[in-house]
Length: 330
Image (cartoon, rainbow, N blue to C red; front, side, top):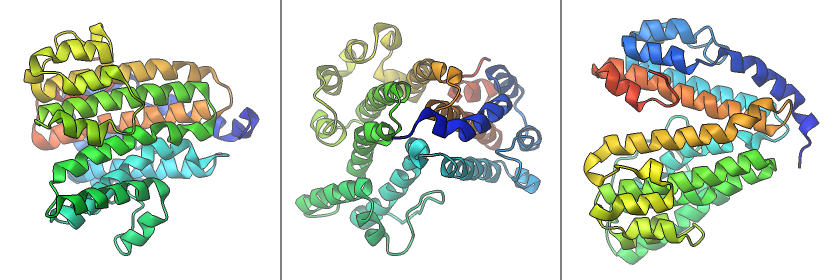
């Protein structure tokens, strides 16, 4: 267990870096003006996080987005290496490994094309051996192998998607527990709950059976009647079940018929709740809370910048792009 004083240096670093994060108003202005990749890059390259990104990457919006994502992941790993506990960044980085593992397992058991994820730590060669040495990934790989064996044939790829969702939900507390922070633990508990809701709603939108949702998504959660009710809810009763799982205010008016846009609005409200939980971290002079909170805001900002670039590449209406962003005043 580390002491708050052990975090003095990285806390001081992020105290400076926080001032270079885009404010919600600035991102809102960018979203409303449909900026070109050049305009976005001219702003972000002033930041220490993105300063090393080549200006030539702005020639193509999607390549630019990939370059910004690579920069933020590299920076997060570098910052974590300077912390007394490198696991401060695990919750933000594990999703790349899970996404890569998902693609690998779909290749292995579903006949899909192998598509490695560039920012993952999984190697392209001797992947099975690497997975065995990573307890979190090994548990998921073993469970998938058991399901595939029981299927006695090609395994449906959506089962792996459900299992990946369930694995992420299940491991959230253990990813943050080493930091010994009440604020971060509260964030992880809320993120676990909202991630479970998002996964269940996505599955129901895709027509997945309640039994599969229970078996593959909710299996590693503590017994929660509200989440079980949400998984079992009929389409016309989903709003009520969602109100029990989260809150009446968030669930009001939500229906499966709203499709992806409804889920987008739901996750935006979840994001706002997570931001409120981390607000006190800004007043922690030295500790893992300060670094964790900065990383969360940094990854969210990066997601927003990539949404802007994706909108530019696809010619998407600025209003639609702005709606997909998080923590932005438009």
